[in-house]
Length: 231
Image (tube, rainbow, N blue to C red; front, side):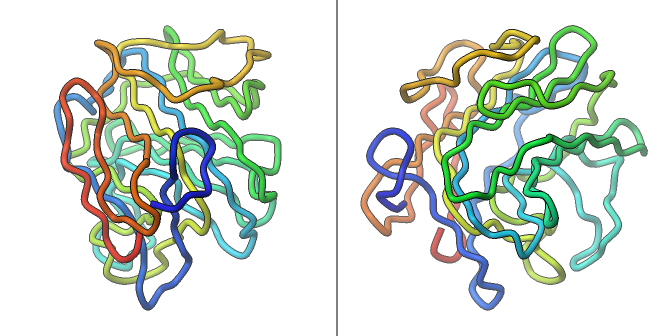
């Protein structure tokens, strides 16, 4: 944890250091199976690195270590920032097919941005700072058996282009069974730390001591969060 934050006392800091990569890992759980249910996946990010694709969070299988080929059939979703534009890219998978959509605003400008990926009924929505940036027709997501990882995109984190995140992530909430925001956008992002409810399946405030590596899931059914490197 580091004391740069959007809310609370700290946030998770990630550095693009391939010799000592930083990331966080959460074991798979039935709570993370999205299928065709409504959901809201959201967090705050702060980065100014435009030199690489940057993985925010993934529940995805990259296949063999170091491979560029995604194992779509064991993948659910991923969020990243684009190397060229700084836009948020969202990917998801159904059966053996992968899908994606991109945002329209630069999110790697050194400011805090609220990122939200949501499904309401049969439509997927991507919001940045409360503004609707893209939509797509939904399909049933695969139930991945992989860990949920923050800050890197490799299956085991040991080789290949890890697309490391370089910056800060704060207030991550994974909600299963609810679309929390209006589908037309134009809403104001949350102005305080999230609280847990029956739909909250993973809630990370990323608070703690400066340079600390202990992170707590504040959902009603907490999961173990493992820090790798200096995250």
